[in-house]
Length: 345
Image (cartoon, rainbow, N blue to C red):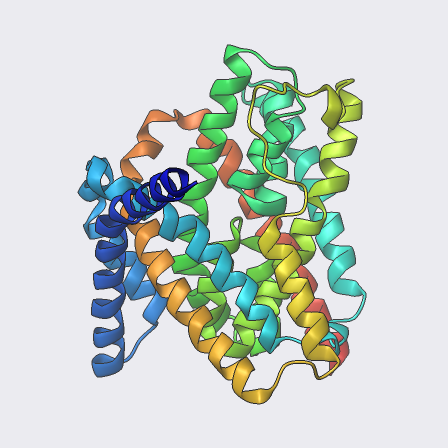
């Protein structure tokens, strides 16, 4: 027993040693971004992203890769989960029923438009469904989930990879530019959060873009984004039925993300606790600080892992399709918010 316990301890120590270089790089980027933001003003998370992009060459270093992966995944999801401590059902109720309905409309129409445009661009309708689902729901995670229930094969695997690379790059671009767009459109913080949460692809970039605008916009954006993430389950089920492949029939050898990610479950649990007064004020403040720390480190790691050059390998047709789907989703939510603000006055 002692030998087993000792071997487990050695394994844990080796894992910590493997994580340390990448975590150190991400932490130093977070410290630098925090220093620049504190002294000169400006969005902290955007600084973290830009500094991370400057150190992309470290993503090819095997010593850093494990820690960068941990920071950009585990710390990111932890940061998103802890955001739930600041959100209550009263804040969600303020959004009304229109926002979830528009989110559902965005998923259905974006997938439909993707399938139609894909054929116009000389691509398969299946690729249009894959990209449409990734753009309208939750980026790379949706691409992997949908890819698990469409017919397998070399072409399908390449399409999933292209979608993951393209949607991640576009999501990073949207994170950097959409906050400026909502400022130019003079959206208030709630409307800005709805737009950012309804249009940006990946959860990380949604949270970062919302917090660039304001803490309230970040909270609203997170809620709206998780509404979209919740639509992944029925979407994957419907697509699986379309291709005669439900989740049980998918290739078991291919890894699939869970239908209910743990960070989403934790986020909802914290929202429930906060809504009934189960989280003390000091604990909520500590959770908020921890969330911010995790997110800054995670965004720095994401910046290091992001290669803008990868877009050049996709070819113009897949890029044009992803851009068209992204533009449609942005136009839909922009029009909705303009009507929403007009009738709310």
